[in-house]
Length: 429
Image 1 (tube, rainbow, N blue to C red):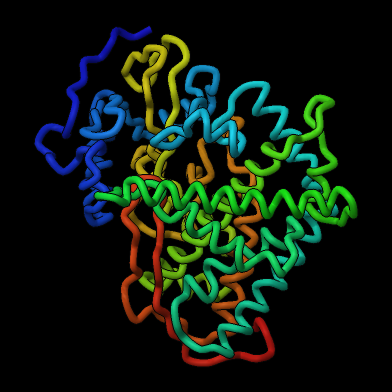
Image 2: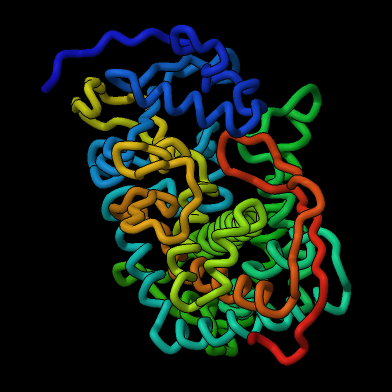
């Protein structure tokens, strides 16, 4: 084991703006934050930061690709429990709402993930893939009829939400209410709160989560009585090691799928359109042979935008990584947004290149047991929607910059104005 490395707390020397524990850092322009990450990667060992508010628990930040990947693949040392977000889920919240898979480790996590994975049968996945193409066509039909507007509202947010609702089998009559709950539950994750909002906003998010889980519990009861060919039906009949999934387990998974699955994919789609608009050469290349370049384009969009900025881990045993020794209880941040710009792995990492190969980005996690369960579907959604947009809506353009939401958790887009010049009514060319 390496000798303990003495690291200073607070800002990186000579770069006062690079205090990742200061909410003000996450309000800096994204280019400045990426520059700060590059300087952090040049250090001999992970930097230590101490928050000025809240728990004030110091944390170290893993910024290099190799370190983030290594920690991700050693869950026995870098645990997801008690929580991967800051603040960590309160014990009472887990008791009421159920514990999400992202906060689990070991046998508990493996058993639940195995059960969920089995529910994604080949038949269900094949139907989902066909449905993704149908949803993309329908959304672009509606965009063409409605005309230019906010891309987030008209397409980016709706694509993953409709796909997940169809996959789960959520009846149409429930969807508007559930969509509102999803927005409320995720609106302020990773966002600095001020004044009375420190109390009111978390309360609103928990109320939305509770109402969403009540609605999902009602649907689950219906599926127990009358099963259908959907994910909810498969899960309500599933079990973990001989025990039926509890209402809380179902509710926690449904919340994860709806909130995480929708939020990450909608932001990736939005950033993808921004990147293609800003790089007309790459857009032209994609349009020249969509089938050839689509997979590379999706991977590069995810790498370049990194929808999830960071997750946290808690050290469980003495260990060393990246030139630093860790003790049990230490808090560690896996900074995916930095790992995906590591010049030791990616040549010209700030360049957007849809032909980049290989592209071992960590946009879906660093591997290991917590690799994103929905990565395959997210990629299909992005490809289907971009195929429809680029071949049917003529010259899609962005007349103004996207409205970004300052967050230390996800690379969130609030709104994105867009225009297009015409419509090809006969579908993809």
